[in-house]
Length: 135
Image (cartoon, rainbow, N blue to C red; front, side, top):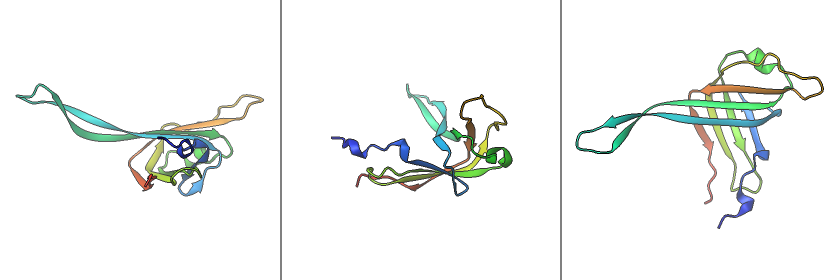
């Protein structure tokens, strides 16, 4: 049976860009999509699949605190995502390699409201640095 205390809360997530903790980030999402080639073979009534290239995409968002993303421009950087809920079986760190923004937000504000900043990006690889295991 699931021990509910072991469910990881995003509250304990952290994002690091090139080693610098981004304290203003409150959401990070990244995924890898695999391109599959469909193959139809004689004598087989099933379509089979061959692995193709991979594509990494993501989005990070949070409060605007500095002009770092504007100053960084379209240069590549690494992101380390860290989840470290004190009640979980451990912590997880994943490095997103060679991230590049899709667009840079230069202005997006409304009087009387906190300024939010969102950056979508692609990446060219990942590495599971610290896995979580129930062992």
